[in-house]
Length: 136
Image 1 (cartoon, rainbow, N blue to C red):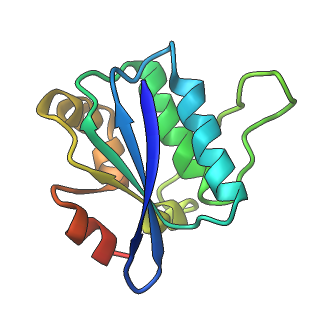
Image 2 (cartoon, rainbow, N blue to C red):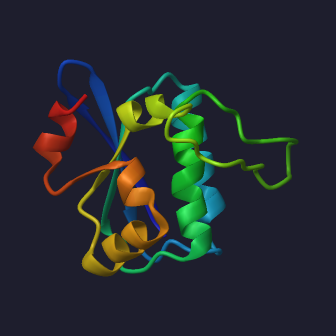
């Protein structure tokens, strides 16, 4: 899994989290940690670029869920050196996550999984970076 970031300017600064490789149990905590680190560094608007993700497992879906929770201000690290703790994503209570985290260009198989588990209804999904950035 490769994790990189880029910055875009719109009405507000936007950070793009670029992921490449399978998103699964072997690396989902790396994605969560990367998102927590940029949030702790002051980033408040995030686009998750899924164009380089051919496969996402349930652990990978959990990482997207966790990133949304981070961007509503929840620190998911219950204790250092332990796995992150999770709780349900509530579309009403966690509405700000939809405002601050967007998904970009999921491949068809990943998009189908997002749709099946209901995450596609929670996140705004864009097919081009310019539209995603302008949505903030």
